[in-house]
Amino acid sequence: MKATIWHNPRCSKSRETLAILHDAGADVTVVEYLKTPPSRDELARLYARAGMTPRDGLRIGEDGARAVKDASDDAILDAMAADPILIERPLVETDKGVRLGRPPENIREIL
Image (cartoon, rainbow, N blue to C red; front, side):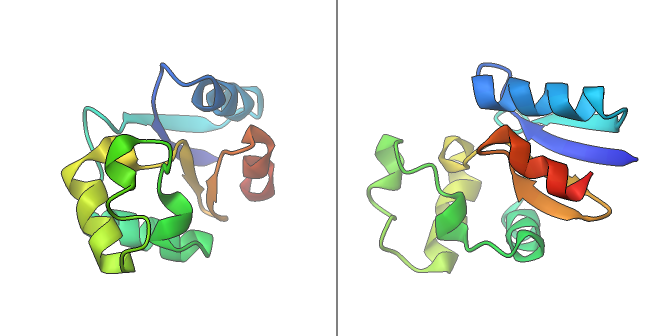
């Protein structure tokens, strides 16, 4: 099974999620999203596939999130594309769907 993880190696939840993928024997593509951020369109596609809104994927604890937490989905996507630290992590995509790895066990649904 192939999987892509939008990963931050400094995040414990992201590291735990990556370990679950490896333990499941997945062929994992790791994208360090702070170095190689997804485009606005890619984020919209991922959230739609996950059944999430961009607001669900907003890392609300970040300073920059306060300005857009009550904004439209389009404004949130624009903010995430401009400042990828606002993207909640990790996101995982397989052929079965997309899940946010918070908690990391959520991704088992798409393995």
